[in-house]
Amino acid sequence: MALAKAIRGLGPIDVKNVLRDPMLGWLTALPVLIALVLRWGAPLVAAGLLERFGFDLQRYYALIASSLVLITPMLVGVVIGFLLLDQRDDGTLTAIQVTPLSLTGFLVYRLSVPLILGVGMTMLTVPLAGLVEIAPWSLLVVALASSPIGPLFALFIAVFANNKVQGFALMKAAGIINWPPLIAYFLPQVWQWVMGIVPTYWPAKLFWMLEAGQSGWLAYLVVGIAYQALLLLLLVRRFNWVATRD
Figure 1: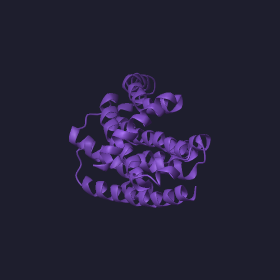
Figure 2 (figure 1 turned 180 degrees about the vertical axis):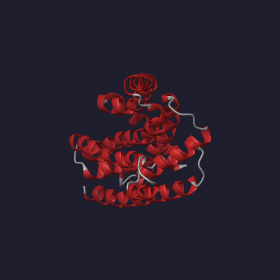
Figure 3 (figure 1 turned 135 degrees about the horizontal axis):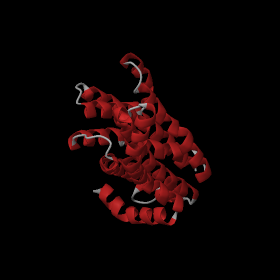
Figure 4 (figure 1 turned 90 degrees about the vertical axis):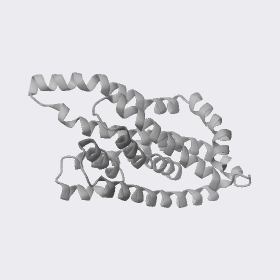
């Protein structure tokens, strides 16, 4: 397959680029570090809050764990976005357009990597945090639903940033889209639909439903993936315009 050849050919180069850039290496490891902090820190904070204020933080462990479902693919996408920025700067995207791989093939590779890594790392970080018990198949469904967040962030940075400084600023600004789902957790269902305009709401809601064993989750899976796919299509078109313009 062309994708497999692209992974074999470009994958080792990407790994080298990530390892030699301290910021990219740090961002790659950050989801695991966050999961470890939650694993050891959340019980200590929960015990302190319960003892001092009578507040039971464990009631909100599912909410806290859902943040990992969003943050993990987001950070994977940010790393890919920065790699795309580097390749825009050094003219790689222009050169690829006259190679057998083509810009479309290269973009398929670039977007497939965060999808795959997003699923794998989500399957790792949520159990590693140890805040909730969720069936492996349920976690896989959630990981698949949240994985498009990675390509969305990658393209968002590659399209709208001109360098890594701007990319880092965009990353922090775009991170605000993870807040509406967390706010929606405390809202009645009728008001939660308002938060559905934010693509991260759908995988977060899906996680809460599957973790609680609720029915009706399939609709959230379908709508969430369809909505993210639409946004991804718009960003791909924008990226193709930027790449050919450069």
